[in-house]
Image (tube, rainbow, N blue to C red; front, side, top):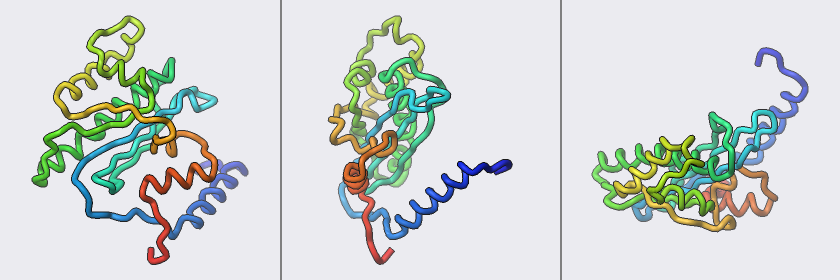
Amino acid sequence: MHNPESKHFYLLKRLLRYIKGSLHFGLPITKTDLVLKSFLDADWAVDPITRKSTTGFCSFFGSTLISWTVKKQRTVSRSSTESEFRALAALTSDIIWPRRLLHDFGIPQNYSTNLFCDNMSVIALANNPVFHSRTKHIEIDQKFLRDHIQQNNINLHPISTIDQIADIFTKPLSTPRFHQLRLKLTIIQDPSI
């Protein structure tokens, strides 16, 4: 903002073109089951300068998308497992609020919220009570996740990379794959919007 360069104008123009092309898209709110579920992904060391990873996740209430987040992680991760593990901790922290809010509205979540992750190492690490010296640097996140798994607030499920909706937030995609994931996010083109 203080010292714009030509590359900034190029990126602004690209953003405005994207917005212009998506004016007729919206998120429908549909009457479905009252079950929370979330999808998460992380792209390891994606930033070429800082080597920080990007976290992406989205949450659905039934089939209605209610929240999504894309954020650069605060620290550099040493592996893709660590990167996704940090994303899982962030999503777990994020999902606690809607669970409490739904309880306040008289819609208690008496069951675990299903979180879908495409990294089997992360699922094993989160469910494993044994702590290894290789994972000491993420011990707080690990204990946080174990507590919420044991309290039945969350339940981790594997998902194939093909079905991982959160890929749209963390990876460059081909146009057909982008359209497929956008549709899975329930973003639809409606001329009445």
